[in-house]
Image (cartoon, rainbow, N blue to C red; front, top):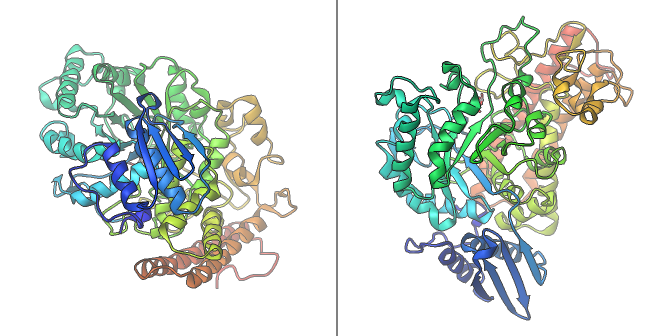
Length: 607
Ligand code: GCV
């Protein structure tokens, strides 16, 4: 099974060594009746031009641009879309990254599609055919960088650039013909394991150690995209140990990589993960800004700060991170998460592109230079566990190429490439996928509050699961009210934004409902814009979310999925229904007991 490449030949021959070779092969096998000329035009770089003259197509592009152009042409024609006589495109973001959180023991952190595609038993272990398919999947939606190992770099991945470098170089060879460059997550403290007495980024011995390491790595993998770093975050080592800041740390690595054109992608997921819940002066969403904003403009040119899209951690609804809006003099990547950690574990249907489009709407043009997403892939036969989770990878690629991509067109193209459906069935599935995020949001945590999940595993409801813990993720619900005041009169989080942004959220009467409890602490009797009370809205959303999930199951039962997908989809839908019911019961019961206020419609809160 090759995900959305079902109309493509099962495999790509191993002797094809360049993107242009792959492009020609894919064309000959998917569009044998079409006359297509490929023109090498290096000036177009990764971009391409598709031109039609009577029954002749010409695709021009630089090396990988040709491949992207060909994949686009094939997919548009296979899915019956109109291709204009002249169609030109080039990527909006230069690094379009997929970050795997794969460990070398074969597990995948927050992985819901089986074991690692790259590792097993502490070593590289992969099926070359599946690796080539992954290369095709990525290139066919425009992605160009793959980080193969978890940002939490455990043993033996800590030796990836040392003992395992030859194997890593062999893996890079598989991806190169698809225009994909590898990246590795590195452990900031590594010099300490090699006779250097410190990992202080300003120490000359440390700088030398990283410079030597980069030289060795690039001699084996000359096109490596660079290093990805999680430092001073959730127990990972970093510059704070030495009284240095993150510009000191990132710039030191950047200097080591710059002779080879490599990037340091430095994650900004830094917060106090040992917080005392009684401490009301610390508010976790403020953390990233506090650690990085003052460093704006002090990073080297080859440092990219990778910022999670929201200030917390991939919740169903979060505002766009203030760092992504405010650091104008620093290269930024927005980090998304395809792996459905808080969004249903690839059991519940959750199509992400509507959520991403909202984020991009808040992001002024030119603020970021790159996009990254935590991978949702694994060794399951269909790569993504739930067959529908593939739509997230596919549409992520299209959006990372150009965020203006039309949501419905992207989803429908994925459906057409994946299933052989009538137009009516295609629209039914598109509606279902496009509404799935809202459905999930309705039956889980209310109105932007997030975090009511089972701790650690992050699937299923647990309203107080994180409430008195160390992670800074509190809702503080009591008998009268729920939420945290993050306005200027509260924790001040909103002050990290511009005045115009702040004005939209500061007043609870004007704040959009979906963010209400993210920004405000409100009594259950608070009147929402539509006249309902807050508590009634919580009840209504949960009942409605569950009912919509029931309707999704009915739609799915009527759609003509191929046998191999049907079993997976139906079995997961059953679990989703159970999950939705459980969320609805538990969250409504929690708020009913706290508030003592009955549902206006007399529905049974808990049967
Ligand atoms: C890779 C969350 C996840 C962790 C993840 C971390 C991160 O805390 O639960 O599994 O670790 O984010 O993004 O670094």
